[in-house]
Image (tube, rainbow, N blue to C red; front, side, top):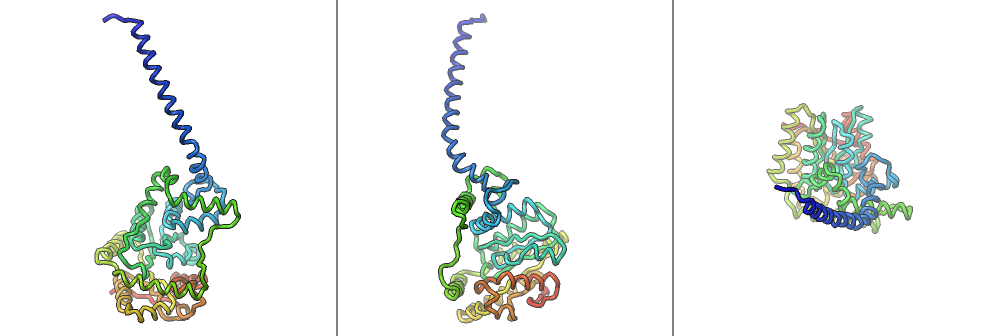
Length: 329
């Protein structure tokens, strides 16, 4: 086979010509994406609303983490825990979140993380336990159980949070990240954090919150399958030397009164018995000086931080002043 320089030159010209249009396509694509990178990705990186990157934000930490917790408390908590895992954790919903990890640490002398979430579901607490057990050797778990969230609610933000943690590029396309970044940018420009405080009086808000029990009455308590998932966690903890306790956070006595009026009290007592049968339980939702005093509550379901501090001391010092301690038979 003979070599033809003219044919070789023609092939080179064809190949070179194909590369030039391809390069032009890449240039146009970069120009098209540049506004996205500048308008979306750069602000998200500089603000870093959930603290994914190891750098200082251009927004005050207090503002951005308050905003992040409001938009997606799960993502904030899991990113923080992944960066600084501790062998002792708290799980639950917004009621349990009032117990501050730093106060528990001061009493117990060991590091703690509070992985309780505003609007948290039982499914999210279960998923969070297994995530924590996967990344750190756990020593103790305090599993918050509220009657309101003791259902089969399938809402689970944990899986989405794990995907963001494992693939940081997903951080820039997350709707919750973009929403939090926008609110943080507004706060930086206006010097006023975005707030969603109730617009009604404290008394009206109290009544509105009690009205939420009607929604709970329309749902069923956790199924045997979900309770089985909890038993599996208890078995895992016992097999691996992890101390596990359940905590029923306090609610104002108005809640129990309303339950009785609505015919929900038997179901509520069954909930308590089910939790106590799972393992050692601190039942803090009992009649005492805290649960009778409205001034110790932000609303019927959530204590003030000062009252939560009293409960914290009661549990972790072993005084049990504000909680009954129930051991499973």
